[in-house]
Length: 516
Image 1: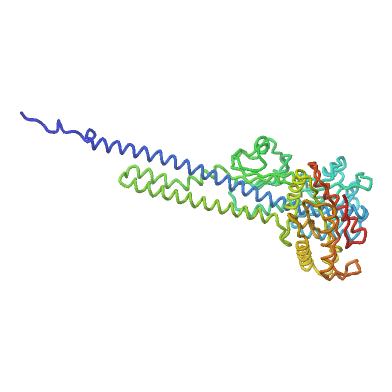
Image 2 (image 1 turned 45 degrees about the vertical axis):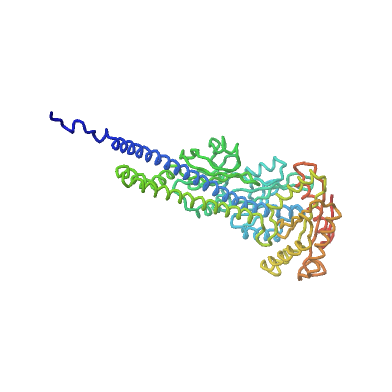
């Protein structure tokens, strides 16, 4: 009986080895497909997270830049108002005051101009070259607002076009009052929109990536790369104001722009001291395109390797190892950026010239120490110092020598203040401050007198001083209180110390005056 062996021999798929290979092949293809989908998804999620972090870090950085820019203008404006408060509004019409305005404008790149208007909106003084004889700004929004509001704080308004130069400027204004508290005019500083335009242009971004500076009332002050027609546009319908800022003052999120409808990954940060918000947005379509371009080769190679089963294992292993290595490197880079960011945040709390705490750190520490006082029931004292006739010192010896003088005075203050947890800060210009925790009036007086005497003993020459010693001297004012937890205690303590300082200067300078 003839038998065909082929009739009984198992085919490749029916054999155990064939089934095993078919199963292994199917399992391998399935695993490769699943692994690749998972890897690509993880890569996209990681890329998305990195871009969100980039956007958030950029917005925080720009927020700090904007806050510093407006803080400098705020301090300059406050100094002008303080001089007018001390000397009267008529002082604004003097050549000395006009020269001071011009000098202050020259110090700040972002400053377009400084102006003083009387109660009728008439120009009294300006840092510009001329004062219009019949010029009036009574119709300006900021002027109307201050005339109808008693708020003495600085106000940042919508962008306007300067009547003197035609430039787009951001008005930063403050109300002026007469001795009876009635409206006496407005002090105005204008910030150049071009300052932010130029600064934001330093960043290399995509064509549809945006950087924006926005008022908290939703009005655009400047946004790159949109034309100037976008300035003063309201973003009230943007998710930034309808949703995002209601949950966090800084962070990152994805939404469609209310200006052009483009979906972007945004970082956002609200300024602490001023009603401003900074946003940085990366075009989501461009992010996808870049990510796809960076990953398309891997996708094609994996599709080819699905056919080339013999090399698939090694290739996948190499890809996994490569991805792990890349992820580790990205994690290290992220950690390094985080460390750098923390370092920058620390530097932002130190005055670059004197090495003392700056105004931002001073305000934060004063709030903390007042909270401790509320819990412990112990007093807190604040001493305010001012270098006597420091403007004359700068005029006589130059600003470089003035900086050296500030450094020497700051060193003396640190050396003479051996008080536990005391905070020695540069308050602004030639003004310094010392916060003394757990100390009352007697302690504050002792430290203040010690500092004033130490600066006098240093015998720093000052030939144009108005005092007979002809050396650099300090005037000091101090005040103390025990915190009851009221929100205005920090302001009240500073006002009392500043008033005491004012009395010390009025009583002849080079002395200490206390006020509680």
